[in-house]
Image 1 (cartoon, rainbow, N blue to C red):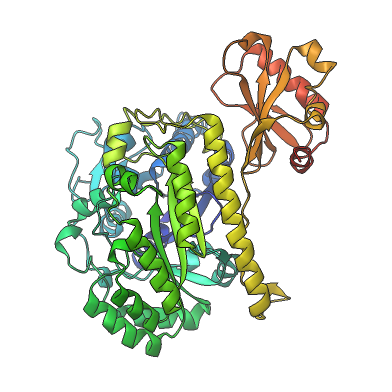
Image 2: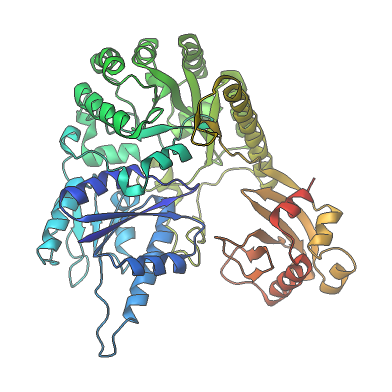
Amino acid sequence: MKVLLLFFTDPRRAFSSSVAALAAVVREAGHEAIALEIYRKFRIDHVAAHIEALKPDVIGVSSMTRDWPGASALLLALDRNRSGDGDGDGESAPRPFVVVGGYHASLAPQDVAGCAAVDAVCIGEGERPLRTLLGRLAAGDRALPTGPGLWVRRPGGWTDPVPPADPVPDIASLPRWDYDVFGEVSQIIDDGINTFGPLADGFLPTRAGRGCPFTCAYCSAPRWGKLQDFASRDKRNARPVAHLCEELADLRDRYAPEGFEFWDEHFPLDLAWLRELAEEYPRRVGLPFKVEMHPSAASRERLALLAKAGCVLFHCGIEAGDESFRRDVLNRRTPDAKLQQVFDDCRELGLETSASLMTMLPGETRTHTRSTTDLLHRLRPGSFMWSTYHPLPGTVLGDAAVARWPSPARETFDDYDEVQTLTPPLVDANERSETFFELGQLQTQLVQIAAKRVDATHAELVGEGTPRRRARPVEIPMPKRPAPAGLAALLGLAAPNAELTGARAGLVSFEQGVLRVEIDHPLVAGADPWEVRIAPLDGSRHFIEAAKVGLSYRGREAPTELLETLRSMAAALGDVGIEQLRGALD
């Protein structure tokens, strides 16, 4: 059978640890595995046509919560297309069996089951349920029983109760990840698929264990741990050190990575395990590696053992700068003094540092976001990454915030109505923009510092002069400001045209390659202005197109007057590109 495994990315990254694990199961069972990366800016109809051309027998979807509106829209589009694919005598094309797994399917299975195109939902770890599923389908049996880890739609619907997760397997008994399913591995490594640190480098993702012992209020890991009963496992199902080192040595010899980056939910904590790693890894593998660990667990002894083993970068989440907010809202109980000690210890031990944080958290104020920037300046990580909070099912914060999850997406995978949260951040649009600008500016400074250091100290090159280590592309989000006259002229929103249409440019901002323009119009006098988004044509959803950019409006329908304004703007833009518009902001 041909098994198509879908995964979603933003930014682009041609690798998924979930798909790597499942593709190994597919191939071990004797079937063909195909991995398909879906960037969230892609058009749904284009991806659906590509999938139809592949003619898979089974479609497996690995979906996070933010990906599900787009994934469900894609599956429904495939179903609609098949219903019209008859050969003239009323028969439709064979229908692939569709199974959905991942965090959202495991923690909100009823939401996934609400998609009419889904045949089965995988609950928890998916390797063994997928193997069982493929065995039955290969034998011609589509009337699968619901069992541990696999909830199956019956002819009468989802009549079986949601099953428990499959008992977590011994991780050492599972097949090794399949890296080759993503294409030429050496090219993927050179493209930079690593997560931690300011540089895109040649580190290869891997995993030492599963599970996390902490109970952060925003995170799915505690609920996942309960599903899989990780709480009773002192080592969180860590692989034996000898087993891990044997595989990493093979990967070193086969793919020649620069090092390894561990994508565990939490790196193993057991001191005996770490002591063994510190002795065996340098001898048997010898490449540098990076890890992620909760700062409360980062004792000086553990950090010293990691450094001895060959760790070169330590990553941890700081999440928010206000200590009371971290403790009371996020259930992150690491005090500022401990965070400072961890980062100081890392510097003394020669470990580079990386941090992650969130903003726009429930109840967060502008004072809170400033404290986050202040904490970053005090801790002095070598780099950091930040994200906007998104509520997740099965979490303390998510269950308190969301009455229902979004409906399927529309034209692109990221084009859906955002979650209507009951616990929003306490910042206005300008404060949000200021926060993003401050974080983006600091992030860029750290990346530039790292890039200069690499240019000065790393002479190794790959291929015809292409540096294997290079700075990550980071864009500083531009805070809202009044539209400059030059930009308004390019958009056709300056006099005399504005006097004819009634539309004028208000505040503008630039973020993630998109120009956002607030349009003041007599129709919305006294109300919020329209927000028009202008982006390159490739991969974006647009109402109106100019030669090089498209114009869109957030929402299901645009008023007639707004569409007329968009057409007028498109005509004025002509062949102006996004870079020229960005330049007009300066």
